[in-house]
Length: 315
Image (tube, rainbow, N blue to C red):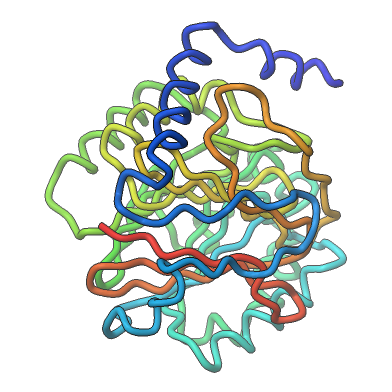
């Protein structure tokens, strides 16, 4: 076990106690607090069939789709990058996709500007002809100080920043420096006027049971804000796989780090205090999100076009 993972396992007793009570409350109720039926826990480390709960089976009858996007992370120059890019093209041919969203580690190994064309531009050039690319920055993007160069290359502002699509607002944070300043920025926007659905995007995961595990500073500064405001969806990367967690407050946390680099195994068990993990897949993939009037539907889609997981979030 690495020193980082030992540190994550030895979080404070107070954090564990509070988080454990939240999870126990959800389990006792037998469903998520927002009224959705909770999918049965799945065996991690494999590609999973889509859950067939009452929540997902009614997705096609929940009204018109207002907007959609695809999210992916941890891809630059990886062996699976092109296959995932092509799978997203096939998805976009039959689904609403208004933007591409990344969860970071877009350019390996050190975010070098001379690799922007090969790792950011060329693989997604057909998708980007009519769609923006909105990115979070990962540790590899900033390790040599090139994070600002990447944002300028894509015409994006400094982190944190906000982007809007019909029916949903996406808030991008810098997961390389979780702090009070960004927590305050996030709180101000989540408590202000906005659409029914808010999606928060950053690299280092709030919750993960894999190589990097959950990020302590994210859990300290940002998770209380996300839970208090009952954010619909949180998208992270860093661990190169797919995982979905649901907290007792009904916040959905997704690790979508299978965009192309080598995959990481998923732990068989999560540490005490981790929210319920309801799905996991060790496969190259992207996460597709479609926004309706009162529901947000997410699907993890493998590079072979197979739906690995799906869920409907209602607010």
